[in-house]
Each structure stands twice: as structure tokens, then as C-alpha cells.
Length: 379
Image (cartoon, rainbow, N blue to C red; front, side):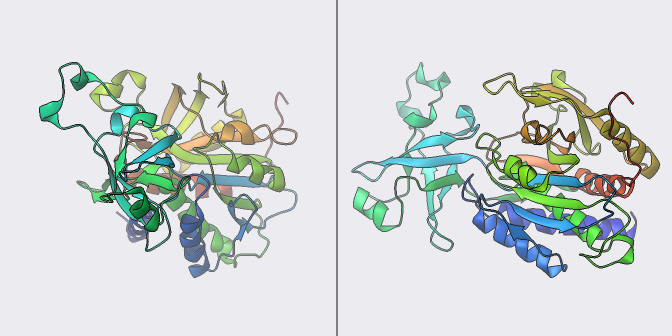
């Protein structure tokens, strides 16, 4: 491994681990944004926040080159408190795609303020009292209770918990074998870590300083909010920035475990991924078929840089790029990402080598976008 690559992987490890330990339910991403803003400032990159909470860093480029928006979301899924019982047990509503079978007996954090957060556990009926029928049933989110150890509603409220308090999986980071990491909110703090690494690369673009116009495209890096709450934040950022090109960074469903083997050929540690087709198929009926010029760009870049590139085509997957692509006269869009196992559970898993490959791929692809980059369809 080259020394520069070792440095990038170490930075990705440190940034990802730090961000995974910060709670940030949709609509409550401020702590995550503050940590990212500090990291950007440390490398001399200014940033700004819009009214919805998106964090944006802009790198000016050639006026006649397409403008590019590269983005990842800061928020995570979880719950909101809906009721506090007289005995102190707490009932919640699910926020985002929390799987029912992943809830029982999990540790959670009730976010009342930095340094004052309250720990809790999702109750699980004692095995000795569980009937045969109950053994193979899971509770829905409105049926679960959270136990914080408090014995009354007054005690829970005195600790700062109220109706509407955000609840997330208890933040956790686990170093697994080699360069694999498990923990909470890999989706999409890993994408945020990659975006920070891209900012480092762009800050030294062509040896110039951040803020100075370069021959490459203008690049807007967006750390978006409320992706897990029906994909809201990135659309607002795109409406303001009006990019010509959008590159979205998020997980790719790894299909290298027995339960996922028929879903594709995405291997953890096999390199970054490119989505050729995504379709939710539920509720929103939205998805992305990428712009052919972006597919060609990514494939050519990966080949030139000798970066292994994996391919994905999935039903059941949805990203905020689905809405960003529809802004203005249309945006040339593509989803890029990293393989991840165990999505939306309390312990997700990714490989740092894939994150490094993804950062290198996007930086090299951005360098290939110039004034002559053609986005015309059918020309």
C-alpha cells in the first residue's frame, strides 16, 4: 500500500468512527453537522448551512464547465417519543425504515442534549414467560416500550425526556478483522467520511487554495439532512445550487452473505459500487436510472485509475438522488456507493478499502469534468 493511501484510509477510519458516535436523527442533525463543519474548517474549507440544515461547501471552478453537486446524508433512522407512561416506560413512533425484527432488546439513546442524553433499552419479554406462539412473533414499533430505569413519568421528564424527544440506536463502533468496521449509522456516516476526504482533495486542487477558481468544474459538497424522512434535504440544496450533475454517495446492498446471495454480486471489500437501476417499489414509486454520460465517466475513470468497480441493479432501494435528478431542467445523475451489510440494523458493517476506493474514484472523475463535458442526450 502506498503511503498516501495508508494516510487516506487512516483518515477515513478516524472520521467515520467519530461521526458514528454522534446521534443525529432526521431533523436533529445539528451535532453531526457541527462535527463535520469543524473537520472542514481544520483543512481550510469554509461551509454554510441552509434553513433546513444542509451543510454546503463550494469549490469554484471554470464557469463554462458543468457544475457538480456531490452529496451524502448526515441523518439516521430511529424513533420519536410519543407517550410516557405513569410507571416511566416510554412508547415511541418509528422514524424511517427501522426493521421490526431488529428492535427487541436493543440499547438506545434518548437525545435530550449533548452531555445529558439518556440511555435506555427496548424491552424484551422474559424468555421464561414467553408462550410458544410469542416466540416467533415480533412487536411493531407502536407496541414496544423503552426502559430508562426511571420509575415514574415525573422522573423521566425530570431527566429531560418529552414527547417528541429523538431516539436512536445507542452509538457504537466496533473494529472487526482487517479494515472492516461495524456499528451504528454506517448509513450514511461512511458517505460523510468519504465526502470529507473529497473536500481534502479539492482543497488542494491543482495546487491552488480553496476558493480560487480552477480549470475543473465548480463542485458543491452537500451534507444533507432528512434523507431517512422521505428524502427531503438534498432536494432543497439542489433547488438552491442548480447543479448540472449530481453524484450521490450512499450504501450499496452487499450480497455476499447467504441471506442476500440472490440480490446481486456486490462484495464487501470488492471496491466501490455504481447503481445502474434503483426502484423503491413501495410508496414513493421512485428511483434512478443514471445518465449515460455519467456511467461512461465512472467506468472510464475506474479503468484508468485501476479501481475495481462493482455494479448494482436493485428493487427496494431508494436514495434522495431520485428527487435531485428532477430539479430545474433535469440533472445528470448517478448513485455511487460502498458495499454494506445489515442495513438499518443497530450494527451495520462496511470495509474501509471500499471507502478509500470510492473517494479516489470520485476525485478522479471530477478531474475529468471540464468545459467540453457533454451532457446532451441523443446528440
